[in-house]
Image (tube, rainbow, N blue to C red; front, side, top):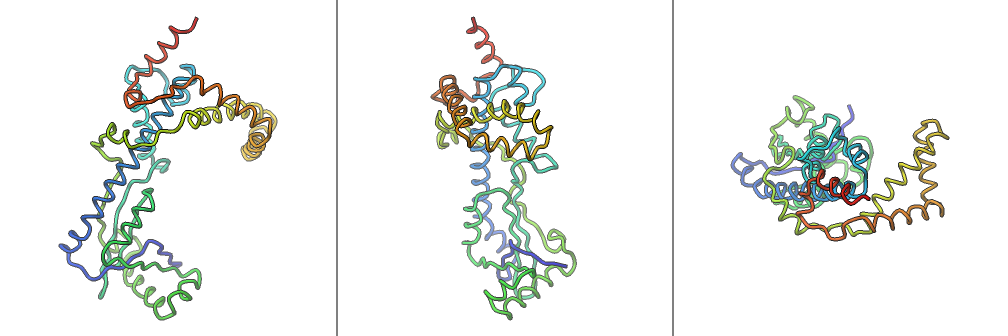
Length: 287
């Protein structure tokens, strides 16, 4: 059976109390990184929802956010929160992976560790790797790179130790014990405070995002007729079109159009705007 352990580390033999003390700063770091990642995603998605509500018809907007009808409870933040929750809870793992855990497996003279950091940034992994006593201890048997880097004796020792670790089961949760550092979305995050520290996309960038989506919708209908639903061919054709001078000119025109429609200055209250009120206001302004 092939062995590939890329997230393996080694610690000295530690008591349970020592592990509890050692892991405390990692818990704090993971919690902070999870909240930061979630807040940024929520706020940026809510801005996108608000922009779509600003430029689309009500029918097109409901199709975009996959809702059957408008309700008084729809705001950019609530819609974004629901979408992220649905994706994170999906069995198909279509959203963020925020299940962060660490597995400890004791052997005679060391504690082997597997660290699962999900979709957290590389800074989380760097923090972990710089913690006291942590030694990288990866192993794989599908190439000679490890043996060339560490020498045959050290590489064979790693194989022996990982074989000991998994002698009862190849499932990490059964081979040792797992400490969960985070499971799913965070609760009680002060999104308003986080908003102050988020870099809001420029008007041009927001307009360009909408322009690309609109152009893709329009061009896809045209291309679909030619390629009879062959998705790869359609994608390639659209990519070629977008790179062409014709495509770039069409995109620039749409960017300019959306720049004139979008709100230039966004604040946190914007994300609490009732979507139904926004459409009602647009209807009243229509001659």
